[in-house]
Length: 165
Image 1 (cartoon, rainbow, N blue to C red):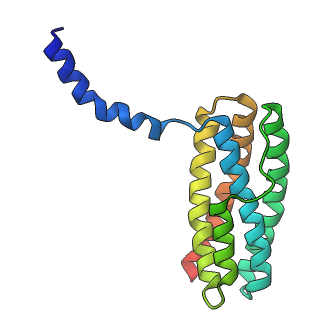
Image 2 (cartoon, helix red, strand yellow):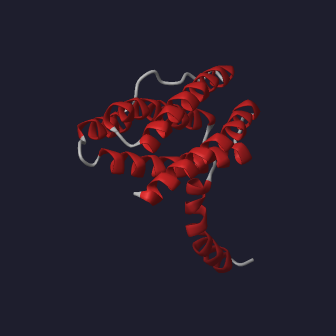
Image 3 (cartoon, one colour):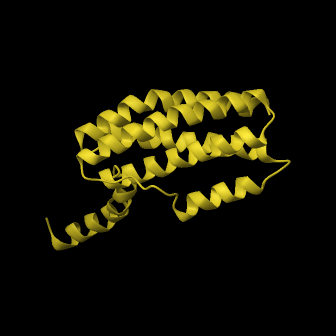
């Protein structure tokens, strides 16, 4: 292969090489961080929804979020500890900002809560599905795979609520 051909091939391949990090699976610590922050926020938002919403479907969904994510959070902490990864005890700034924003909402709370939960569960399903298939550590992959059906159920539930709004 000539130098010119090699350079031409390299130039053509460079956009693909640059895209690889975007397609790469999460590192275990990143997965644990995202899963932990997301679950913690969903518990806190569920508790907030119990105080702000009057919609019976949203109240039932919020109770389900609190129950299921409390169990998943405990399992994540136990599983992450095997890899010597600690799950944060507090929300990071972006998750705290979302909680603060929804805490201030009044008339739009139900709509904004359901919209956020639909988007959040779409992202969570993608995160857990990808890690379950491609993750680096078997015990975390197992946790992601075992948690995924519950997240899909949550996504379906909130999508159904959103469709009625």
